[in-house]
Every structure is written in structure tokens, then in C-alpha cells.
Image (cartoon, rainbow, N blue to C red; front, side, top):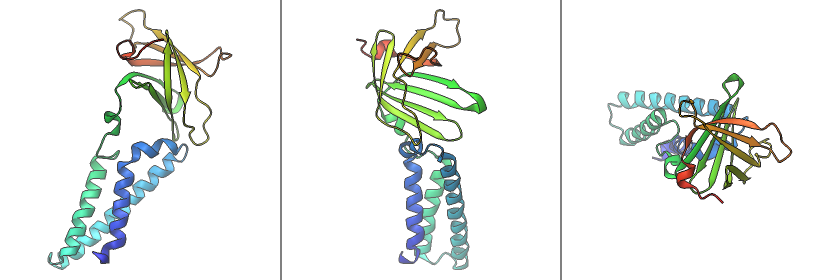
Length: 207
């Protein structure tokens, strides 16, 4: 397979990048869109190479075993990327159970999503002309959630210090309540997110 060594390496690198998107996408920040475009170009280049190799394989009447094996490899890589653009394995599902999801949609369809997990970790994901993620741990005291961030995305500011959980007053309300985040104790305005999932009472120990 030495003849196809460079293309094999390129295909395997692409496969690894696609299947580890969950871990590196959030740290790209404002470069996420550029990275996405590069991945699309990467896919197209590999697809063109596959078409070329298929053409030569047909001319050879499918007699070149090495070329056929290489075509099989590239077909597998590109097909998996097409049907599973975030990777074959959904890594989020194998982590600790999500006990709360709160989100907020801003201008230009910018979206902020905060997820709290049963093991007292959180992930805050902001998608707005790029992708930025904050991760860390949290603890609850009454209806107040205190955050401790352990990551800083590219060009990102510090995360909120705490948030106040405002439960819905009636089952007729569309959402399960609101989560108001505050930068610090002197922050009097806060940022409000609507709660679309809340199993905190069942899963998290409150101090």
C-alpha cells in the first residue's frame, strides 16, 4: 500500500478529526467557522481523489487489489463522515446524565446552552459566528448554583460566578422556569436563560 501512503494518512487524519469533533470544536472560538469550511474542503478533496481512484480501478478492470483496498478505506471514511458529521460515537451520551438544560437565543440566531450533569460538572456552549465552550464544576445551595470554571476558550471572558434558579409557578407556563446568571455579587442585572429540562431535585445534593 506504499503507493497510496499519503492518501491513506490523509484519510485517517480526516477520520480522526471528524470523530473527535466533540472534544476540539469548542476550543476553536471564532475560528470554528473557518475550521468547518476547511473540513468541508478536506472532504471534497478526498472525494475527488476517490473518484479518480475509482476511475483508474475501472480502467484496470478491478485487477489492482491494493487500489481496491484503498478505495474501500476511503469509501468507509467518507461515508461515515457524511452520515455522522459529528462522529460515529456520541460522546455526550456516555458522560454523566444531564440534570438541567437551560438556553437563550440572542440576535442573529446566536444560541447559548448550559448543561448541568449529575456528577456536578457543567458545559456552557455559545454558538454565534463561532463556537465557544466553558466547562467546570458546580455546587448548589438552596436555589443558587455556584460555578467554578476550569477552562477558558479562545478570547473568552470569565464565566458567571453563580446563577439563581427561578422555578415556574404554574404548569401552564411553556418553560420549566428560568436560570438567571450573574458575573459576581455586584451584578444586579444578570443574564436569563429558559429551562427546558430540570431533574436537579432528583439527582443533585443541595447544601
